[in-house]
Image 1 (cartoon, helix red, strand yellow):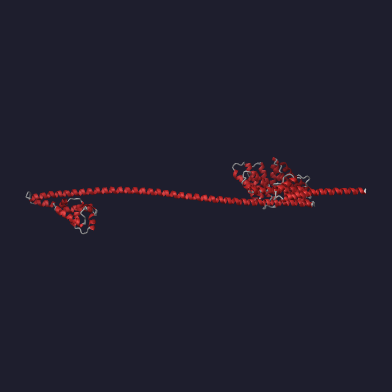
Image 2: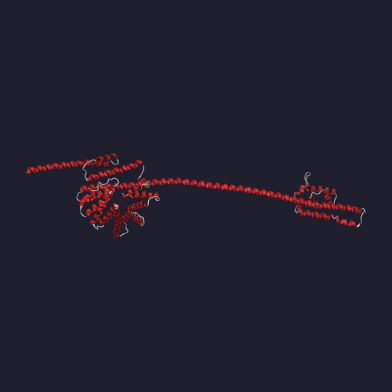
Length: 556
């Protein structure tokens, strides 16, 4: 009997050590490939992907190994994205700021907690298609924007926008229930509210959302509101059983709706409830049940929280090996997420900087164009002003020329008029002189006849009274003075040595009278008048060829 017991113990020992060696060999092989894949992620992504393929084909992997494999997948996927960005020369901002037609991508970013990437997409989409977006879709996108604002800690702005949405009378049941749910989440974090105000607000709006969601079977919104209430009762320690009840229903509704990410988040809350109730195995089992629902890529934040929660539960179970491994993987994912966020920020800042440089260059070029346009405008204005000035100048000269022509015509007309007047006066004066000369000639004849004794003596006195040469002479000179008032003064100034008789002779010469006619007026002989004319030419210093009449005419 004793020998049998010894043999049995020996065999069990051999089996135990053999199984341990096989397990250790399996662990060593897995860890070697895992570490090899992790270390080569940045060096050669193909090696990491090859390690992932080999590790994925291994059977009977435990939860720690699956967690490590998930981390390697995530690290390789993240590095592949980085390599792609480096290769294409693009950055993360390109897909967020300019993909304004793909609002689904913006919603996906916000649902995964990347509000800084999702909000610009939704804003750009709404701004571009505002007039064509159906009201129901526009309300839904605004609710998603409120969720993004909540993630960015802009609580008051999100609350006001949600209140405005809820005031719409034609709000669809889904959007109304969703808005109630999100405003409950906002009240959960408003810093100005008291504890009681937060609790009452969360309960009020969550129950309003539940009422509508239950009526229309909105499983997604049912899960959200139930999850909100479960978190409320858990964090306030008001009622852990009620918290578990709401979270369990939320988990079921998320699973019905196929929203595994939300279901995994709810499992973390359920795990915490079990820990608070000291149900440590349940705390780990509820997490193991959901850990294979999703691929880790683009869901790293959920897996990170699950692994950290598993580290917490295993630590309480005194399973320090698993607690350490899960904690290490959770922290590695946390670090990777942080690095990704920082890379995203750096890329975003770099893209904004490059965009600012492009805008600066565009603005500079636009400024040059504006200056050129301004110069062209100024030149156009100068040319127009010059053209107007030229036209005005031409018109001015034309008008001036016309005025000069008119003035000349008027002067000619005036000259003609004066000439005609002059000739008329001359003619009139000449006629008067001719009449006087003729009268004097007749009277002289009569005088001679009477002197010859043909008539009585007293008639001679009467005839003599009619032959008053002095009086006639004065009358003629007076008429001349009235006709040409400036002639004698000018002639006197020009030739001050002329006698009165010479001045009278000049006046009679202006009237174009012959020597005989002048002799009759002055009661002198023709020869005397001719001699007087010769003496006058000498006094006037006239040459032989000079015309006495033209010279005297210049003083008129």
